[in-house]
Length: 216
Ligand code: CDP
Ligand code: CDP
Image 1 (cartoon, rainbow, N blue to C red):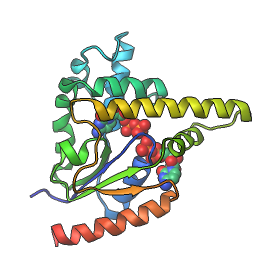
Image 2: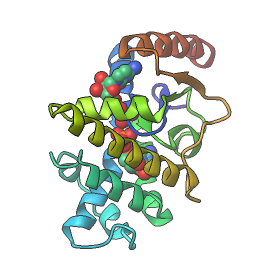
Image 3: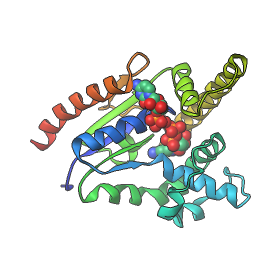
């Protein structure tokens, strides 16, 4: 048995996975890993090397360092798209599996991503799937990026962001290797009408109930 519980937080882009996972980890005193950063860092390294991220990128995944994951330039739309392209490659995913499992080995962990409850930890103690409509998620990402433009520009930017999120979700859900999907035993939280605090309260309620069953 692991040294602590594993809590999987999966879902589409900008659903609020990271925000929730970080707070859950704090409340339950568990380490937290944003697994999207692994794929973003690999995508970034491919771009830096002048390589099309759809081309084989496993050498970047195999050589990934903690410093690569701490870079400040991983949160751009360009890197998100590159991440999705390298993430579709089975050899890239294979190179990152052990890092994710090892992270939780000692004390358990909260991990957020796309395939945590389905492929990385099919036996996770708690599985959450966090989602919202593309329009809501685009607005969240827009507000995160600063969002101080004229009304007309904002409308155009929002439209572009929603289109980019939809395309990335579609790619992530339709790839052959560990596609994004809801695990059979996941608890789905639709967050369109919930703020981050309400999502945390609901997730904590479910997690505590499950942890009593799995951990006593
Ligand atoms: O924050 P956002 O939801 O926009 O993206 P992210 O979680 O940082 O993930 C970036 C990309 O990495 C996703 O679009 C996926 O293609 C990939 N990813 C994945 O395949 N598996 C994971 N466990 C996490 C991310
Ligand atoms: O990790 P992911 O890409 O799924 O999303 P995030 O970066 O955690 O959250 C996107 C933005 O949505 C953040 O600015 C949150 O404050 C906001 N938000 C949220 O996380 N949950 C809600 N229910 C409502 C808004």
